[in-house]
Image (tube, rainbow, N blue to C red; front, side, top):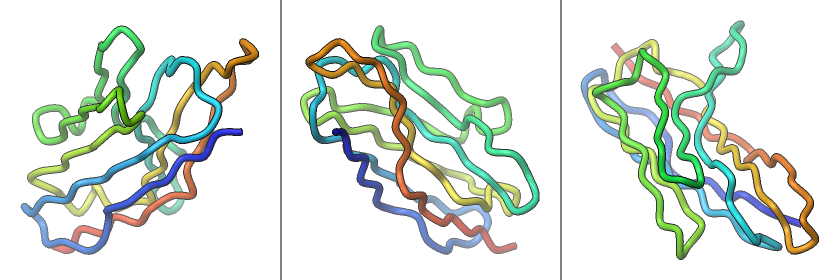
Length: 120
């Protein structure tokens, strides 16, 4: 079993910054990809940023140049630095990971979600 523990989030004014962290623990042999999704009220969940096993990082267009995803492989942790936040960034942010366990099973995991609210 794998657990994703999220931290960070909260309330910030437009133009401010927040940092989200997500640590994966449990039966992890290989991290295929790890990143963050978000879901605003009345909208579908969307990819924000992810990093692949090879180190490639993908961002949704609306956050490019403002958000930075980094990872600590030794800790199975990713960090999402969010700068120049806008009210439209308000959403519940979910950590996501695709992991191969020691028994060669590949599964997708989700965190419990953390609220990010940006006031205008």
